[in-house]
Structures are given as structure tokens and as C-alpha cells.
Length: 326
Image (cartoon, rainbow, N blue to C red; front, side, top):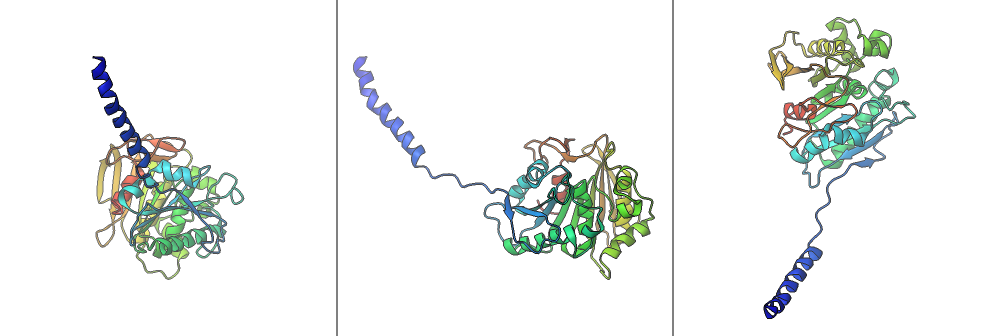
């Protein structure tokens, strides 16, 4: 018995050494992509920061998504919390993440209500437009497949970009956001948020058309996510968005599709050409935040946290599918 054990020892030792060497000599795994800050992207009149996420090995000609965080948030937290960076890896597109600075707004809100920041060629709107141009140039992105989305104040800035720079965006996705020009129509951003503004569809549409005089289209398609229990940005604002963008698109306000998605009321409004131009998700019982559905399932994405609400529906995934990203 002793001789047998002795005979086995070199074999066991050799095997252990071989295993150790295989680990030590194995090539290091390729590093995953990470969020990167980009400087010098333009004159940056809105004094914003630019971050971006580009999956490793992303080929040319891929789409670009611009994702705008909400108040008290930042680019990195919004990138991961929403699920946009995970979807970028899965489907193959890049993400631009503008970030507000406290010198512009103490609570890190994009200034969707300031006239100097919501006009074409000025302020924060111009800064975001410059980020789009820089990203398209750097990654050889597809200029016909650029999309913009945001939460709350980021949702308000999403409508700004759709109105002031419609030629740059194929579609927009607004989460708990507001119609373009709402603060001016209501007389104050707080009245707009907590009550809503009283405007006819044509008056709402005129505000968008005035942001890009002479523009003949096409206008970006719009998808809206709104919690019915949101007391920060009231559901009246989703009604205003539907009125505004159906008017801009020449569509009526009778939905062509009325069904449910993940148990939530879902509506689709089609334009004169039959394509979906406005789409809404009314998230029953949801408060103020970004809808997420954490998990590894095919339709799941995002991570629950402050203003990232697990409601079994991931807004980023629904937008990505609507935009043909995956």
C-alpha cells in the first residue's frame, strides 16, 4: 500500500503543476468596454459633459442612442440602471450619455424649461447636438439611425432635441417627460410638472414647428412611458405629448392599436402613411421613475434602485425593439 501511494505521488504532482501552469500561462481575457468621457466635442455652449459607451469591436454603420439622465442622476448610473449599456453589448450599437453639471443646475436636472437651453443652436440643446455629430464621426455611426431618450428632466430634454433638431433623430423615447415648450405654455416648470398646461393640439404642435422653422420632415416618432401614480410629472403631460406629436405628425388622436403589454395599457397612433408615429405605455400604479425589469430573460433589462422601478417591463428593451435595434 505504501509503495502504491509513493508511485502515485509524482503523477499527482505533475498533474497539479500542469494545471497551475495552464492557469498562469493562459491569455488574459479581453477587457470589456467601459464608459468613457469625451472632451473637445464642440463649442459646448451648454457646458455639459459627454460620456459614451462603445461595445468592443463595434463595426461601422451601427445605430447611436442618446440617453439623458434625470435629476440627481449622472451618466454612469443612468447607463447601467436603465439597461442601455447591456443592450448595446447584446445588439451592437453605441450610447451617448450627456451629463449635467451642478454649475448649470444644482440638482443635476437638464434645463428643459430655460429658453436659452431649448432653442436650436443654443445652450444645452446645441451641446447635445454636437455630441451626436462627434459620436457619428468617431464610430462611423449610421446618421439615419440615431435615437434619443431620457427620464424626467432628461425626458423634457428629449422633446427639446426632437423639436429643435428633428433631422438628427429617427425617434425619441420619453419616460415621465413633458411636451416641448410646456414650461412656457404653463407659465412655470412647476405648473407644467404638477398640473400640466392647457393647450390645444394645434397650439402644442405650433410650439414644435416654431423650434425648427421651415422644416418639412420627417419628424421623429415618439414613444412615451408614464406612471399613473407619478406625482412629480403628472400623467396630464403624457396627454400633452400625444396631442403635440400627433398634431406634428398629421395623425388623429384615436389610437389605431389599444392593447396591453406586460399587463399595462398600450396605445399606438399611426400617421397618414400607416406607420406608428406615437406610442404610449400607461404604467398602472407606477410612481416617478424609469421602468425596469431586472433579470436575464430575453425581454429583461435594467437594475432596480432610486428612480429605477421594477415593474416587470423594461422601457429600454421596448424602445430598442420599436427602433429595430435588436
